[in-house]
Structures are given as C-alpha cells and as structure tokens.
Amino acid sequence: GGMGVVYLAKDTQLDRPVALKFLGALVDSSEEYRQRFVREARTAARISHPNIVNIYDISASVGKAYIAMEYIEGPSLHRYLASKSRLNPREAVNYIEQACGALAAIHEAGIVHRDIKPDNILLAKGGLVKVMDFGLAKAEDSRMTRTGIVMGTPSYMSPEQVLGKEADARSDVYSLGLVLYECLTGETVFADGDVLERQLKEVPPPPGKQVEGIPAALDAVVMRCIAKKPEERFQSMRELRDALRKANG
Image (tube, rainbow, N blue to C red; front, side):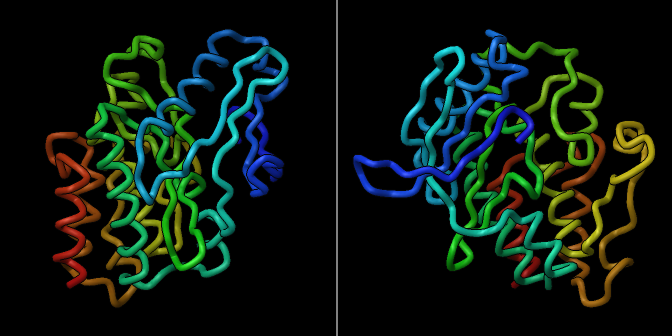
C-alpha cells in the first residue's frame, strides 16, 4: 500500500488468519505518518459495519507500528476488474451499493474516506464488499490534514481535493462514481496525461456511449456522481444508493 506493507499472518491466541499492516521504513520515523497510521486504525475500529474491514489490534511503536485487521480471502475490485474486463450493470451496481452502505456509516460517524478507488474495495467470499484503507480518512474535527494540501489518488480524486480544498461526503460520492464508471466500461476515466488538470475540466461521455446495454437511468446516476461541482452531485451515500436501486430495478 501507499503507506506501508501488508502481510498475511496468524493470530496465535485466537488461531485465525489476519492481515498485518506495517508502516514502511521510509515513513516509520515520521511522527506525522505514525499519527495518520494510528488514526486509520481508530477510524475503522470505531465503526461496526458488515462492509467495513474489522480492526483487531494496533501498535504505534517506532520501528514496529502495525495494524492487525480482518483478513479478506478474495481479490480487490481492481484485480477482479482486470480479470473480467468489465462488469454487467447488475453486478456493478451490487458492489457499489454495498460500498455506499459502508461509506454512509463512515460519513454518519463524521468521517470522510478521501481515497475511494478499486484497490480499497475488497470482494470477500459470496460477493460481500469490504471497504478498507483509511490512511487518508479525515474526521470532521481533525486538524491534522490542513486545507491546501493535496491528498488522495489522482485518478479518483475529486476536483475539490485537487484544489486542496476541504473534502466532504460528496468527494467520496465523486470517487465512487468514477469507480462505478470503471466497473461498467472497464476503463479508468482519468488514467493518463495531466490527470489532475483533467479532473478539474474534463467531463467524460456517459458509460452508455462506451458500452451497449447500460440503462439510461444508470448513465444519469453515474454522471451526477461525477459532476465537477459538489452541489450538483448526490448529497449523501444513502441518496446515491436509493438512486442506484431505482436505476437498476
């Protein structure tokens, strides 16, 4: 991951597999990164939801800071898409609806994820979605990441994040909209060139213009998600989830 390395390990006390995430050596000596690392665990641990990866243990010691978390036996959405090219609308909407549920819980706890992308959405057995990696998550009362600092993954970053402005739940709506677009078309919308500039100015064609068989109502949902102005998007994950259910009904 961007902030560390993850191992498959065994919890010897409870005899279960766990994912063990350590800070990378280059940032382990940084107090700021260690704070962010600890915040990731606390952020996830305070929210109980079936679509969020569970946190079991944490250490913030220099040289051995780690998070022990639920091991998910299954691919990331990124790897799954790579093997499938693209998903049919019903399957794509199923995964995104589940992610909406996780993010609604996060937002209602006063937290913005800020790094939603296919790599951070895992697919467990039975098609259960698990949202993970809160390395950039920000609580509403946190002052650690200040306005004016650009953070996130460029290909999925909202225009306000590109500009270093305050991100809110609607920023996650934008990012999740780009993920849904990618699920439907098999193409990352903003993959090359000056990605940050493109995020600010370029509006891609509706997915239905790229791939046949995508309902017009679903096209409309995707394009509303990725509107450049936050006030033109869905204002909450619950609103987005309701729209997805209607469009896929």
